[in-house]
Image (cartoon, rainbow, N blue to C red):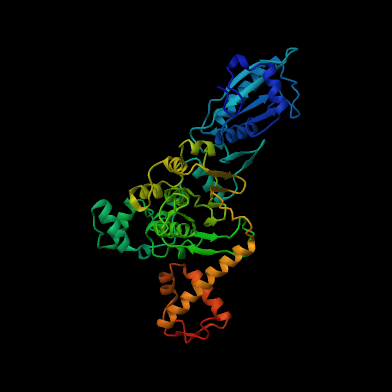
Amino acid sequence: MITPWIESEPTEADVNREQLQHWATLGEDSGRQFKADVRNADSLASDLVAFSNGAGGVILIGVADNGTMPGLAPEDVHRVNQLIGNAATQHMRSPISPKTENVAVGEGRIVIVLTIPEGIDKPYFDKNGVIWLKSGADKRRINSKEELRRFFQFADQFHADELPTKAGLDRIDWDRFAVFLRDVHGQTVPKTETDRLRLLQNMNLATLAGPVNLAGVLLFAKEPELIQPSFILKAIAFPGTSVAESTYDDSEDFSGPLPAIFQNSMAFIKRNLRKIQAGRSVNAPGKPEIPLPVFEELLVNALIHRDYLIEAPVRLFVFRDRIEIVSPGHLPNHLTVEKIRAGNSNIRNPILASYAAKGILPYHGIGSGIKRALADWPDIAFTDDRDGCLFTATVRRKIIHAPSGSSSKSSEKSSEKSSEKTAIGILQIVAQRPDMTIAELAAILKLTTRAVEKQLAALKKQNRLRRVGPDKGGHWEIIDQNG
């Protein structure tokens, strides 16, 4: 059977000179290659390896690089078929069974259509142990350890969440782990270090050699950001529609175990969503403009299914017209945006997914999260950036237009009024409690510590407030209540 990258899936009778001419006109690509002749089994084997490690493909033997079809003489066909069989069985590991078909192209000349299916025993090597991959119409060899890891992940032979880290048993938050073990498995944490290590190994949270693996760190370590600094979430809320904005309304980095990152990220989204009354009374708190389960599903997907071989954070951007969740790593294997919209899935980090399914995160099963998010809010776009190795979920917001006659200046004035209201609130609080900490102010005002720090810096610059003494043990002193 001809593989899916061909426009149609013809039967043997369909592969005729007209079809060959069509392919020749299209030229070479990642699924189609031309060879005027083949005489070297090792060279052919490297092409078979590359196609087998990818999505399969077809080699047209008797077609020149420029698309002309000189074909092969009948006496060459037997030689080439023998060479194909030798290359496919003796010059690559594991052996494959490609299909050949001879197509007459006139004047006693023949083109061999050599079809290579996608391999089911990846990775494939040539006889020298080299792994070849398709790179457009050409091929390339894997040269680095990082790329080798990535390919084994792609071939489902290796998963990033299994990687060993530098964390020992002392980095595990045993109190938090004990709660999970009690609630989910009805067990208690062993007392000896040996038994604890064996338990973590049996639960796929530590390697056989001893260190805690990446899944163990992300789920149960104390301050995992100290072990894996880049595996955090960066969130920024912009007042406009571009990251080029010179100012932002809210910004925070979320670290800690994955459940903490999830909860804090959801809180960030909640406080930056607009509230709508939807027919409620004026005094009612209002509903979020977008259902919160939409973001629960997308955040869980970003944390569980991101590519942890890429040292980069997940990013959360809130714009006036949309909210973006950007995950390191494009869709794995042959997943496409269309397939994930239909409910297809591929688990990149099976250990993390299995623990999320046990209640650590609101994870509801393979492939169903995206469909649920779309059911709640259909206006979601997905971008699979394979060149940039990023996957972005964009939740579009309904733009609320300003009333007729309003301007950006009125919006700025409104923002200034809101900021001044917060500043007055801070001054009123510290007037009653001069020893108030930033964390306490943030909790009372329902703001982030970063937002409170910005307000305090502004008050100091305006000579309305100053700090007397050190951060610990000092106090606030009001200079000018009104500014």
